[in-house]
Image 1 (cartoon, one colour):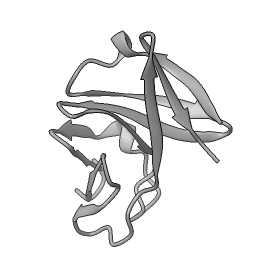
Image 2 (cartoon, helix red, strand yellow; image 1 turned 90 degrees about the horizontal axis):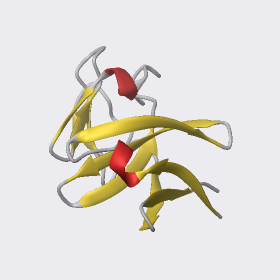
Image 3 (cartoon, one colour; image 1 turned 90 degrees about the vertical axis):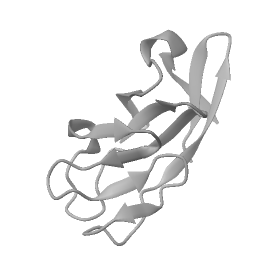
Image 4 (cartoon, helix red, strand yellow; image 1 turned 135 degrees about the vertical axis):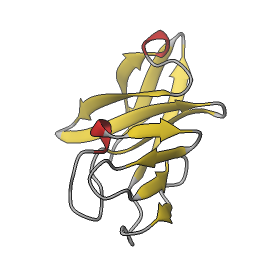
Length: 101
């Protein structure tokens, strides 16, 4: 089931927004390629990725510099070794919807 998380206008290209969906902290990220959603938790030390910054498709954790691709969840830079979870996103009528199972 898809859940409304934000207006698309709230998340400009190059920015992200922290949201809570069904008890999970997520980041809705807006890159040049569109919107994506990932867990808001670094897999290295459980720190909040929302305190980090987005550079293209990569988000960097501020604690130890782990980087993840926000479109795939893939680890781009150590010390993280486990990818972050990603979630399906749809945009309709100016609203962002995320599917959390």
